[in-house]
Length: 293
Image 1 (cartoon, rainbow, N blue to C red):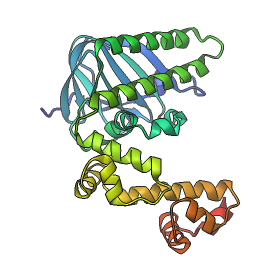
Image 2 (spheres, rainbow, N blue to C red):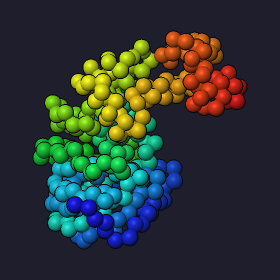
Image 3 (cartoon, one colour):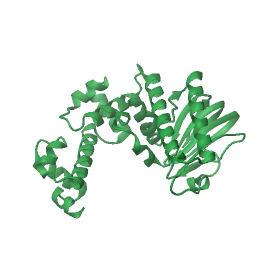
Image 4 (tube, rainbow, N blue to C red):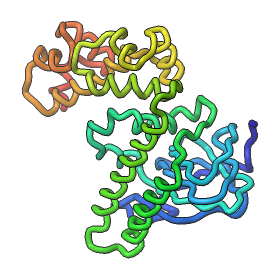
């Protein structure tokens, strides 16, 4: 079902918190009436449906959501709730950069990639699908964790910001694991893409082939290329190369390694090819990039 609700408005995180040093907000709430279609200005929202149900409109797509459903909405997507019935939620609002604190072991996890990276980003070009639905015991565990977070947020105890960041990361890990467990054995395009991205991000400094990436993702090379093109509008090799070049930028700025050494550490066997690709991507050769920084 395709429809829009009301006029599109822009919601800012500053409406909920005035703390510029800690742009984070958490609350227990809900909706008794339809909400206006709105976008988030430079923040993301993690929503956990605690009770009841509603119709969730994301961009022009509608989906029924109910108790236990979990999803993330980022700033590129407009959303609204319609026809809520005893609809209670936990919602956490945060700047996307907060997730940069996650370790490489989580960044390469399929559940994290799917729930916090891929789903929010691709809702703007694919129909809305809420993938994670927590069973009652898991929802109770999450509720207990969030209750502690809300208490910390409201009381502002000494060190509450550090505690909230720690608890938020714990929640992110737990939900990522739940997602991975729920989707295990299923062959959705999103999880196939998450498998591929996780493998690439875990091995991008090593020699990689399309055949190897596809094999580790349990799909054919043709299908791998198709889902990458569909979701990322690029190829797996282009994505791999972008990761390598970003790593090269970091090494150029933070180390005194030679250009040849950096090219080899970033998965390029030919330093001349590395220089050409770097120049194409950043508009200047690696040596100039280093001098300018």
